[in-house]
Structures are given as structure tokens and as C-alpha cells.
Length: 177
Image (cartoon, rainbow, N blue to C red; front, side, top):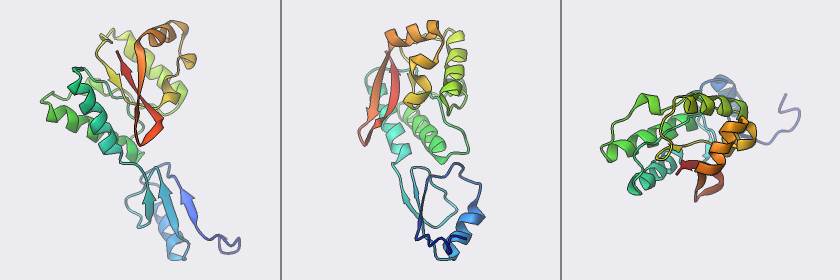
């Protein structure tokens, strides 16, 4: 079908690191190149354009640890997206470098949409964890105060400030201060 439509190539951001691997490989075998961007698939031999999620996460956590933050919270994306795994790996390795024990309860439930992010954050706040020394690593979409309940939004307006990766300033991460 793609040959009939004269497709020269495909730019793709994969929604899952495992699904459709056979399909991607068949497309490549037919001579149609695929270039993965942002989200990649390891089992497909194709060009990839993406930031190093591991390094960005590692350096972000390291910078906060150097500033004295000790309780760092990670809000991952879904496990089926490779970026999520790399960010968690960077988070864990930075903690290890500073001899801070990894605590499974500091990795919250995955969140991808604004609604999921709101739900996860509200469950976290219900635990009454001291917020003055916490960091949450996730995209702005999930945490904008306008998607949260009014009481939670008030907490966010007072306490949250943003830190962005230099390579992708449009990709915010969050610091509770």
C-alpha cells in the first residue's frame, strides 16, 4: 500500500517499545526507511533522533542532590515507553552515586495524561509526605494546576517551581521547594 502511495520514508514516534516490531521491520525490508524520533524501538534497525533521557534525568537529580535536596520523588511515564525506563534508570543511578538508598515508594504510579497526572498527584498528597524537599520528574501537561482540584492547585501555586532540561527547554521537570 505504501508503495502505491509513493511513500519515501516514515518519521515515527513509537507509542510502545515492543508492539509492531515485525511491522516496522517489514516496512524497512520493502525499502521504505523509518526514522524514529523521541521514542525509539530497540529491536528495529532504523535511524533514531532523540535526547538522552538517562543523562538528562541523572543530571537533574544530581544537581538537586548537590543543592541539598534529599527526598526526590519520581513520577514515571508508562513502562511500555522506553523513555520512562531511561529516566527511572537515571534517577536511580544518581541516588546511588550520592549513597542515597532507593525507596520504591518514591516512584509513584505512571502518568501520561493530565487526568492521570492529577489523580497520581492527589493520591501522593493524601499521604501527607513533607513536600519541602521533593522533586517530581514529569511533563508539564500532567501537573498544571488547572487540571487539579482547587485545594491541590493552591498547594502547587505556592510550592512548585520549574526546572527545564537545557537541551529541551520546552520539556519541564518539577521541583517542590
